[in-house]
Length: 442
Image (cartoon, rainbow, N blue to C red):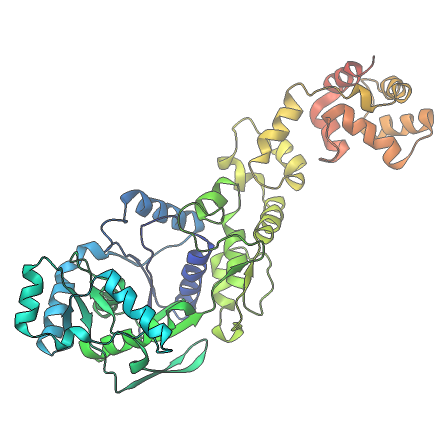
């Protein structure tokens, strides 16, 4: 079997960690099996879909390192949906409906008050042609539903959950065309999956009920049904919304702007909910080799952005100058990079340390013992290296450990923590070191 999967985001907002986790799982699964990864933009929602969102989706995926084998946009395939609709009409599997949103809402409330499941009652099927024509004359806009085989029970062997069984009489006939004439995802997606040749659908377990209805659609349209894997949805350990598509701080745009490393995001999201440890893998290829749905838990994994931050810091500390030089200022030297890389959280911090090394830093007169400061100055001379300076200072001051080194760090950087003092000394050079010491002497 030639395996083919799809990641199908809607261009109605920002990609967030929940979306990207689904993309990653699809990618790892299909590449582990030597198949094809399809990117499909589900833009049937004309009112909410924007080209700006689509461009951001493509930018995010490229930044993360995804490479797709095929690309589709649903808006280019309306003739295919029309063709499928006409076929379903011809075999009596779709029917027009006329209830308004308010009428449907009232029906659901009545059903709830009576303890009845909120399943559509197929009232529109009882309308005569004259009644339908009369409603349309009054300006009532019809919408269309797919008629489920409600005497059947749909069963499938889910790659994550195992055997799932859903009676179709417990599910409402799904709406496939809205009153404005636009196609609904539930239907358009099935038509696309058939035409593209999708063999496996990997998505969140909030779609399980949809899957029962869509399997019935697959059978009606083609007879061929893909395999399904429904993965538990993410929850956030700090209460942030992992599925908000507009302004979530857990969107790819915001994580990218915060300086997170793409490989850190991929490593964390691919490991959540599995028996794999959250650790650094050098590339997607490394993760592909390890992938298996058998490692996945059925409980909802908790996402913690701190895991991405920690892994980002670790990844940066291991990067060579050649790996980062295209992403940082041309003024940065290899010596400078090697000095600071273990003391930054993201590449955005490079500029902070550049300012400290190569521009004036505020004095810290009130934080330094002036007597010791004079000793620091007196022990320094142009001809000695760092080790000789520190050795001489120890003899003069009789200090050691933090008492010896911390005041020097404060004088040279005005920071409580930072790169190794030896490296700071070597990069600054004697004149700058001497100057910064003297600026702090009253």
